[in-house]
Image (cartoon, rainbow, N blue to C red; front, side, top):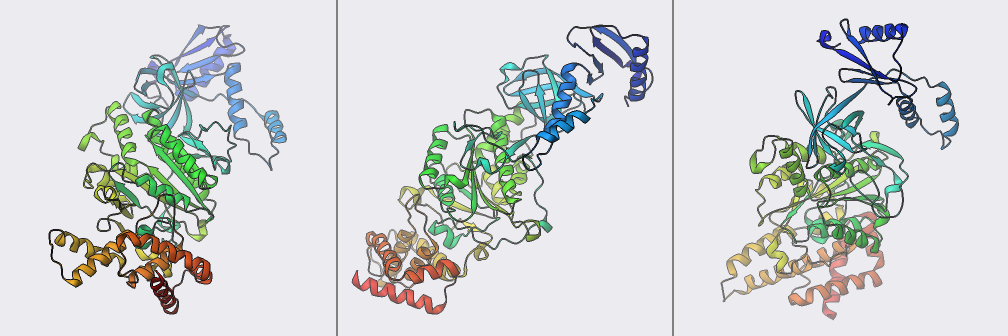
Length: 578
């Protein structure tokens, strides 16, 4: 009901003036819809052959041939396929279809620029709703004001000009989803950009959905092995966990994420890589790496590159998460990487400032925490009653000069279940992956480890912490006692043991055997340069001569005292031959 009907004038556009009977029916319709006092004017127009267009305030009733055809098209889109046979359903729908006098709101563009359009006349538009501009450009409502709305544009804004008409769709932003996306590279709207043809979607999911409730979740207690020695042993990641990868640029953050994706080969885990603000060449390189190591078959890459508009960079992680939720709801496990959320926050800051929102700390809007929390909270391990699927999130954040106390890093640290901190000094010293043992943590901890890994890890973190502390105190000392020198050599051996080649994830038996051997001080007397060849030779010995031990660790995930002693004895014998 219009609150000010005395000023409401309805206009009917048609090629022929309506007769008295038709005018009376129009007036009766307007009175029932908007109350008394609505005046009706006729405007001659040849633009609506075979019908008319009625405008009452912001409501538009398009009863032209084109308008009725659009209604029929929208009805047909909703017809579900019955075992792949949709033809009979289409025929039945067309036979029984009756056009309705449905109001659609049409607004007008007031201003446009920098990917932002200000629109008036869409009083009923909702936050996050998709709008369709006259030239086919799509946008999303991001700001609702008293007499206008702010809309971000997903396409080039050159085709949108002041005065262009805008139509509501009644739909929220969403992406197509399905098995067909595996092995493909798509943009933030789910459109393939790898030149391999169209993708047949199995469904359509909104990019923003509420996170699973507490009652629908179960504890994180199943390991998601990354194949990275330092992470699986000391900062384990479980299925359904959110583990932040944080560090300065060029310290190996993406390498850790890609290694974790490669390590899911043959483990029935879907992997999704979301590139936000990356160079196209970097995305292509990651695609080729995954393909080379056989991981692309179970992977999807969602790319919103640095050359894409800020709205696409803003929506990309939500689109990737929607694709992950499709698989999670089917009971599958998913690993999703957001690379990186620093650039995502910058894209959102740009949109917010263009929408005239109040800037706060570091010019970010006040809701930038909610921006990432509503994304990362969707990572979960569902209960068995709801399918038992999971989404494990590895968000990446870039720091400036190792400052983890900056605004965006502290926000995301507080949302996630731990962080892997990569230190520049370690990286440049050749320690790769450059994981800082002191500042890294997993808040799930041993619950996300197999019993074998948990038992094998033992005192590794304490030993490394003692070594780092002793190293600081002794770096200026020239004369060291035998015990201190032995402790330093042991720590240096452990640090060298944790070095790992890129794209070479380690299996569980490799990690367990190496840990048991190293913590038993089997490498005592070896120089630092001998550590890596010794470990490689030892693993080769186990895999060739003692394959039963390797299989037992991989299949059972258990390390009893007897097996531990056996590993130590075999390692000691091998050390004598070295």
